Length: 195
Image (cartoon, rainbow, N blue to C red; front, side, top):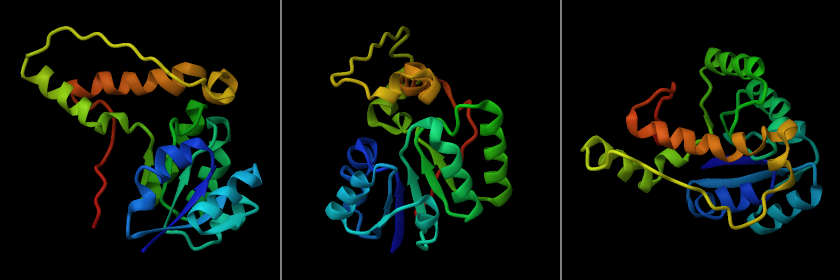
């Protein structure tokens, strides 16, 4: 059983990760929830079981096998550093950090420890992205055009350059990643295994 904790218990955690996949996995136990908005952590604990943690330190001390970081990018650093220090593998919503030097330092610390991590550029794995790749590689398509419509209002922090990098980081980087994916890998990654 994989003991999983969440740092950030809002819509991204619930609708993006817990509801569509994690709560349906038999070998995953949601054991700890931490959010600066205690009510959000309490709601997750009531819905999915697990403990409400009152601090990041308390969550790290829960004996987790892995954690999800689903908080605004300007708050990633302390959560990432705490998990790295505790040697807890984690998934972090993109980007790893808003400051390039800090991101590079964190990446080096992660690599030095051989820690399993993932950054939330998951659109590249969607079936549609795979079909686009196949069409481009077979030369069935020579010109592409895409647009994005967001049907719900963006969260306040999504619009703030200081807190999240603004819409360029929050949305455009997903589409940049998807646009580059069909032409081959330009990023460093290793596929995850389920062993």
